[in-house]
Length: 520
Ligand code: PEP
Ligand code: MG
Image (cartoon, rainbow, N blue to C red; front, side, top):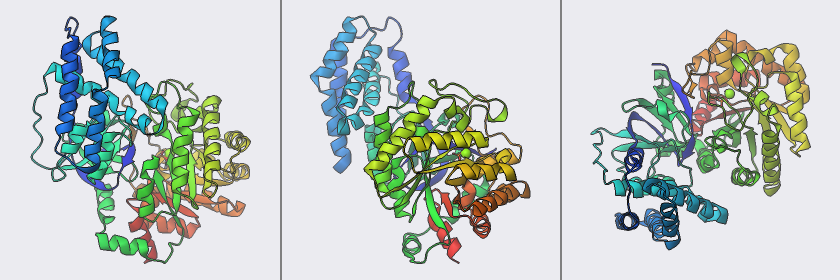
């Protein structure tokens, strides 16, 4: 089966390979309790809330996980929350609906308080489901597989997270949730790799083969033998890892990390990354009905830039690369590049300008971080010029574009693009797909297909384009980096270095191996 490449936010660090076990329990409970005519009284709801609170308090756990349980129980015992439920019930709402709406409203109130409270808000949805499930009283005991497995769920409760047996669970994947949720804190403390907010997780079935890379938030569904071997060869013993990272010899080019969330920063630094070569900002936008606010974005970018003080950080503005467009974006373009890349942002300038403004504000909070901002998938010189103009107007100093389609590797085009920008970055994932005539879309499922192999990027049809782009950048005296998967492949990386690239960027799970290979 062809490999597929899915992206979410990595939590903690580590890589796991194994079979999926898919659990979608809370929704079934919600459906049951929401059946028309299934009315449940206030006392029953109050009892359910108290029962869940008690359950949380009694979970046998210590340290950070214990604190999490206690604070969730406190939320459930808050009389204001119960008053909210009552208000919805007296307006005639069904029990499940009343609970969901009251908890959602409470979550918004917590969010408005900001800081620690805002971070806790993401757990309220889970708590509502838990109370409904308690009311429905239908929680069948789940039969977990006998063999170690990768748990895949819409969300995971802090209580279930605390009960995970690290000897049986290899990693955790959720389609909802944020890296700051209580569950994520608990899973990270248990040192299990986790990816939250995974786009396209609906494609995963129980028994699916998965490779989870928590360092970069990447999940490979049905990974190729080559991918598995690539990650396996990157697995170092603890001592070897320390030796590679502590090796004072520098790699021949700057090695940077690909990240999908500021939570992955610590893992990247621990892996010896000299900075960030690709920060994918898509996760900030996905699942939202309206774009993230300026403040939300400033917070995330400031966290990222602070973590890399004194280092270089390349942030890529929003790149739509899946079939389901965001509801607040106007569609743009036609043909194989429809609704992809920079053209979408240029058709939605208010969204782009807010993102650029947020980045410029964040830059001021971390003056020692060297922020470079780039646009995805530029299709023409005019697009590059327009983007560079907007970014500079917003106050950003280093502005670049990603080279990801064959059309812009034409000598005259790339030469003219280089006149507009301060740097370029080659996205070998897309470039390889398009140069070989493959589509990266998978009809109807919103996922990105990763059916190219690392070796395919070395085929002349692709490699000659990369060589041409690097040569043009050298001639123009502008930095050029590579941030597609091929950058982590030692064989390809050595060729890119011979051609003169300035930086290579990859998942931090693969960086130590890359450095070791480049030093021999
Ligand atoms: C690429 O296309 O190589 C790239 C790095 O971008 P993404 O994988 O996010 O499309
Ligand atoms: Mg790309």
